[in-house]
Image (cartoon, rainbow, N blue to C red; front, side):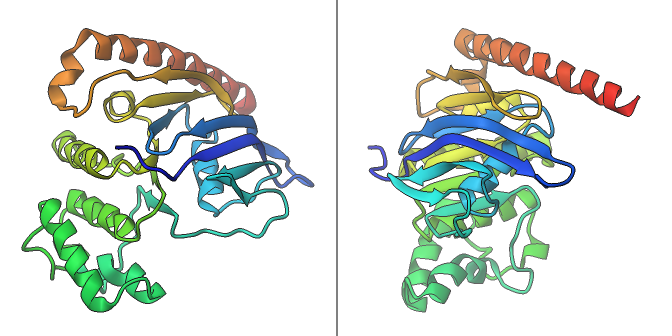
Length: 275
């Protein structure tokens, strides 16, 4: 059953950094929607505006033009005060756990601080999430004592306990080795199958984008706009074996060709600018 909330609409959004000075256009007139309960991945060359888009949805970056709506309500527009909220939770590549708090303390911090749950309620909910994530026995460990994959699991649990409408993941697995990444993919797929939150997932990994998502958006080189949308009609639940299927391989080839075109443009432009 899909989420009843978490529909995101991006309407003619443009982002220009330093409009009165250097004037760098990061995002150019982007319009798209993420349906409630949809897992959408975004790929494209470095510097194409992927993370800028995510940060505008999160409420961390202002818009130059256009508007962003969540369930029909405008959450971002030019001149509107930046307003990050618990309905949109971000998981970054670098991670953001509190080193001085245990796994359990990190997870319950949000709902206890906002008063959404009592400490007892938050602890009971967190312990259920911890058990479901394969982290039982690590409740009282500090982040420095657990692996990078465990840290990402804790960050996602910390997001989920706040009951967000949308999860925004910005290359959370980029620095991981292949085995750890495979474990994290399985964890995220299991979470998505259970809760069907709306997900926007930024990545450079084309295998990852197809394996996890319902739809892949391919961005152009800067200024970023969407070149193509690819529907990923692979059955759920998914496991690693689906990567051997003809349809997965076809989708990967199509995505690779489109991304390669933009990467080549980005490289050539960089050489011209450098020269």
